Length: 348
Length: 189
Image 1 (cartoon, rainbow over the protein chains, first blue to last red):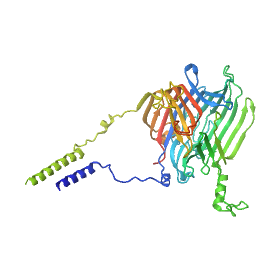
Image 2 (cartoon, rainbow over the protein chains, first blue to last red):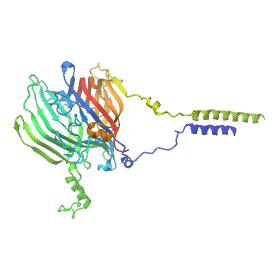
Image 3 (cartoon, rainbow over the protein chains, first blue to last red):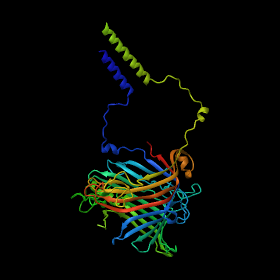
Image 4 (tube, helix red, strand yellow):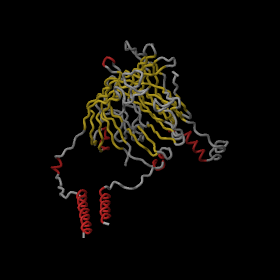
């Protein structure tokens, strides 16, 4: 009996001194419960940022992309002469200055969002996003380098007296391409005062196909996107192809038609946007009007074909080559209804 | 009588043990003194962290030696690290292969900073603390390479292994990386 008393007192003390040993059982969360989880995301802002890398063999700098072959089996080598991200007014990368990327009140973000809020039912969605677009009464024109508040929907601001570095970087890439033993071709691409506000990548998993799926939105606005080529030896450059007021709003995949990623059994990459499903027999009336159709089905297709979020646009204010102007061009309201890209190994 | 003594001894022993254990878990009895403002103002925490260093990934080769992986001096084998990711159940693998090289930097800083001004008026609106990662201005890359590839199996030693290298990247020399990366929570948790 006394031994029992000792044991009990020891047990009691053990329990009192080890409070962390709870006996509750852990339960797994269902997809539905998980989709309700919406923690705070991480905001990222780059302050006074400057990036540059390139190739300068004499000073031991090399930036090379290789391992690519053309259809004749010749090696293709890409030497990156210069890749830079700098403040606006860099004169095609000649003078690099610092720039801010993202705003404290509207930063770049990494977040897990509730799929129900973005049309992906009962899923937790991983999102990488650039600053989001804002109301036109508060935002800045996406193109103009002297835009003031209330002139457009972009959040990133151009350089001003209050913010000398601005939030719109100059981005440039200078490449040398060598194919087999042919002479090296040079190509330079520069974007001035670039804005990617409203862009995002969303990733989640598909239950039925057991596959990673995603949704991309790439907005790219620049007052000048230019392409030219220069001679390697003499550094004399050809005519510059200039696209003024270039705006790309690319929507690849949407909540109804996400992009599927896969690598097939032979080791080739496959990217697919599946076609939208056909309406069931008899759900859409012969005259195609809502009154003669199943209302929910009709509304679904009406939304699919009219929702501007699902469509891609490309606008070029003016295209010029050297001193010749070719005027403006635009592609508007392009809906990607089906897409399948598959890489093939030419060496096989 | 002897039985009574035994019981009494064991009871005494258990009480002594209990006393020892209670004294171990009971709080200290010293009084806590309040610090006044002037004493507190003398206390200063560490301002931040300044980091310099080298990061090497498989510079001479990894720990695995088999038909595929080996020492970097053996040209017939791959010596870099491999990262494979399956995008679909039962499907092939996306691969970052042959990852190797050395990154050197001096002066990466870490500190907590209060922002309540600047940023073209955003600082005053923001008025919070952020984690500031001060980028080191120059990062030196020494034979940094990696390959992007697609593969039929996760490991090169698995049966039926087939791989397509899409492209390879090689970087060497000084990379300019200036500025501060500010990290902070978003939303209203």
